[in-house]
Amino acid sequence: MKIGLVGPSYDQRSLPFDAQRTINLFPIMDEAGKDVSSLYGTAGLLEFTSAGAGPIRGGFKSQKTGRTFFISGTILFEIGSDGATTNRGSLLGSNGQVSICEGLTQLAICDGDKLYSFTYSMFLRLL
Image (cartoon, rainbow, N blue to C red; front, side):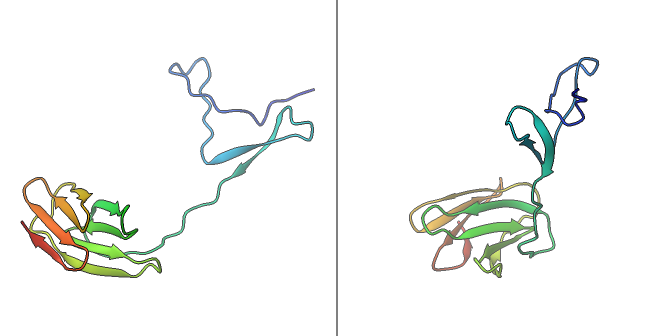
């Protein structure tokens, strides 16, 4: 006799029908491979690095160089593969999200008001 204690996840618009939700769990099938016998939790996340005191306003990983950048408050940081962070310059404004895109040798960073350029071999500058 099946009891049905371990089951799938449903997300219906109307709660009276069925509204179960499985988050961060994955099903393990029984030996016959017919039914779910248990749910295992997924691995958690570990903090890789931290830098800056302000809110994170944007981040970007270069497809050309593999380098990773983020903006915390007014500061542009680069994150190394070892988790070390390097201050690469400052923006004038500290509010709102930023947009970041890249060209062949530089990043373009826009805070909605001003446009900044970061050349991979130099520091941040206002355009």
